[in-house]
Length: 264
Ligand SMILES: Cc1cc2nc3c(=O)[nH]c(=O)nc-3n(C[C@H](O)[C@H](O)[C@H](O)COP(=O)(O)OP(=O)(O)OC[C@H]3O[C@@H](n4cnc5c(N)ncnc54)[C@H](O)[C@@H]3O)c2cc1C
Image (cartoon, rainbow, N blue to C red; front, side, top):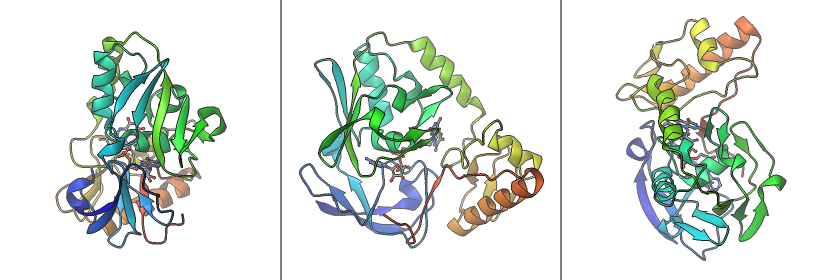
């Protein structure tokens, strides 16, 4: 275990957050329970006063074939997972192309694209040194209840990498804004699209300070330069209130807001 100072206004995808000391967990370390685990910080909005933060070290950054399984460490970036599976002609992971993050973040978010999501490939996750089968972990759309820190996961090996599927799914990213963001701010409510609802209440392109609901895709909260945490929170609250008032729909954040009020 060692301490590293990380400036989250550079490290996080939305380019917001303080410069703080983070405890880096190495193989064999006991993982502290009273801390918030950060992966690639592609789905996070970190407040100026976060709780104690931890991250997994490079010890957990690997992909290997083990019998009938592929085993992947939780701090493996999605780009590395894609190259490994492409090189070894392994099927199923094509959808992780340009889905920014690490395996641990994907597991905790049940990240995916359209009908493709990480839990549909998963066999088991190693949490607190125990292998737990996917079927006994509650999960759903952009949600999984891991109840601990995932250090690696196993997937049944299936051959047949499909590059045309990767290209087809990449096209869906054409409408994503280029400015820094944390991906979709809200989950799509059942039977509706969060972006369409935000647009319908007149917030597409709406700006507070240097933060805005994107002109390109209204469900992306974008940082236009020097955006601040408080501006992001104000925009999130405004969208929730307006959408509820107009449609009676409660928007639920997909983005994780990391404050020192978090419970562990
Ligand atoms: C431009 C852009 C496009 C995106 N497109 C998509 C998309 O198409 N589909 C999609 O699903 N998401 C998308 N996202 C969101 C993001 O990429 C995913 O949620 C990703 O899985 C986050 O991974 P991360 O490593 O960055 O996790 P973080 O953002 O660091 O963390 C996310 C959550 O996972 C938890 N976590 C992280 N690691 C672990 C671990 N080892 N064990 C337990 N919990 C852990 C954290 O505590 C936190 O609650 C996009 C984001 C951006 C910026």
